[in-house]
Image (tube, rainbow, N blue to C red; front, top):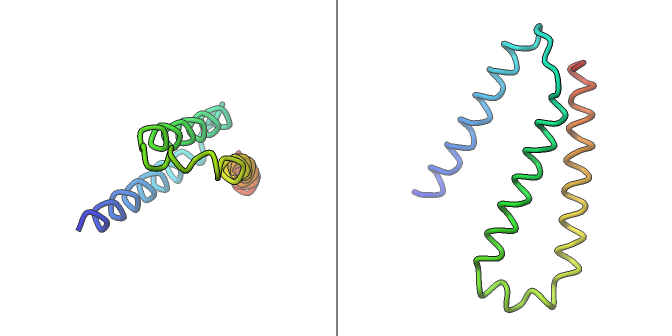
Length: 92
Protein backbone atom coordinates (compact mmCIF):
# COMPACT_ATOMS: atom_id res chain seq x y z
CA UNK A 1 0.00 0.00 0.00
CA UNK A 2 2.87 2.38 0.77
CA UNK A 3 4.28 1.83 -2.72
CA UNK A 4 0.95 2.76 -4.26
CA UNK A 5 0.85 5.98 -2.24
CA UNK A 6 4.36 6.88 -3.39
CA UNK A 7 3.42 6.32 -7.03
CA UNK A 8 0.27 8.40 -6.54
CA UNK A 9 2.31 11.21 -4.97
CA UNK A 10 4.81 11.18 -7.82
CA UNK A 11 2.03 11.13 -10.40
CA UNK A 12 0.26 14.02 -8.69
CA UNK A 13 3.49 16.03 -8.55
CA UNK A 14 4.12 15.41 -12.24
CA UNK A 15 0.55 16.36 -13.16
CA UNK A 16 0.73 19.54 -11.07
CA UNK A 17 4.02 20.49 -12.74
CA UNK A 18 2.48 19.93 -16.16
CA UNK A 19 -0.51 22.13 -15.32
CA UNK A 20 1.65 24.93 -13.93
CA UNK A 21 4.00 24.72 -16.91
CA UNK A 22 1.08 24.79 -19.32
CA UNK A 23 -0.41 27.85 -17.62
CA UNK A 24 2.90 29.73 -17.59
CA UNK A 25 4.00 28.84 -21.12
CA UNK A 26 2.98 32.19 -22.60
CA UNK A 27 4.64 34.21 -19.86
CA UNK A 28 8.25 35.28 -19.64
CA UNK A 29 9.68 32.76 -17.22
CA UNK A 30 13.31 33.59 -16.51
CA UNK A 31 16.02 31.70 -14.71
CA UNK A 32 14.38 28.31 -15.20
CA UNK A 33 17.77 26.72 -15.82
CA UNK A 34 18.98 27.67 -12.35
CA UNK A 35 15.83 26.26 -10.78
CA UNK A 36 16.19 22.99 -12.67
CA UNK A 37 19.88 22.70 -11.79
CA UNK A 38 19.14 23.49 -8.13
CA UNK A 39 16.42 20.84 -8.09
CA UNK A 40 18.81 18.27 -9.54
CA UNK A 41 21.41 19.12 -6.91
CA UNK A 42 18.80 18.80 -4.15
CA UNK A 43 17.81 15.36 -5.45
CA UNK A 44 21.45 14.24 -5.59
CA UNK A 45 21.96 15.55 -2.04
CA UNK A 46 18.92 13.66 -0.76
CA UNK A 47 20.20 10.49 -2.43
CA UNK A 48 23.56 10.93 -0.71
CA UNK A 49 21.84 11.58 2.59
CA UNK A 50 19.80 8.39 2.34
CA UNK A 51 22.92 6.39 1.42
CA UNK A 52 24.89 7.92 4.28
CA UNK A 53 22.21 7.06 6.81
CA UNK A 54 22.09 3.38 5.78
CA UNK A 55 24.80 1.49 7.70
CA UNK A 56 24.35 -1.74 5.71
CA UNK A 57 24.94 0.09 2.47
CA UNK A 58 27.93 1.92 3.90
CA UNK A 59 29.50 -1.43 4.86
CA UNK A 60 29.63 -2.54 1.20
CA UNK A 61 30.28 0.92 -0.20
CA UNK A 62 34.08 0.54 -0.55
CA UNK A 63 33.53 -2.26 -3.05
CA UNK A 64 31.05 -0.35 -5.21
CA UNK A 65 32.17 3.26 -4.85
CA UNK A 66 33.45 3.59 -8.41
CA UNK A 67 30.22 2.25 -9.92
CA UNK A 68 28.21 4.59 -7.73
CA UNK A 69 30.36 7.54 -8.76
CA UNK A 70 29.95 6.73 -12.45
CA UNK A 71 26.17 6.35 -12.04
CA UNK A 72 25.99 9.66 -10.21
CA UNK A 73 28.00 11.47 -12.87
CA UNK A 74 25.97 9.97 -15.70
CA UNK A 75 22.64 10.70 -13.99
CA UNK A 76 23.63 14.30 -13.38
CA UNK A 77 24.96 14.76 -16.91
CA UNK A 78 21.98 13.23 -18.69
CA UNK A 79 19.51 15.03 -16.42
CA UNK A 80 21.05 18.33 -17.46
CA UNK A 81 21.14 17.31 -21.13
CA UNK A 82 17.48 16.25 -21.06
CA UNK A 83 16.50 19.45 -19.24
CA UNK A 84 18.29 21.55 -21.88
CA UNK A 85 16.63 19.60 -24.70
CA UNK A 86 13.22 19.96 -23.07
CA UNK A 87 13.71 23.71 -22.69
CA UNK A 88 14.69 24.01 -26.36
CA UNK A 89 11.72 21.88 -27.34
CA UNK A 90 9.24 24.16 -25.55
CA UNK A 91 11.29 27.26 -26.47
CA UNK A 92 12.03 28.58 -22.98
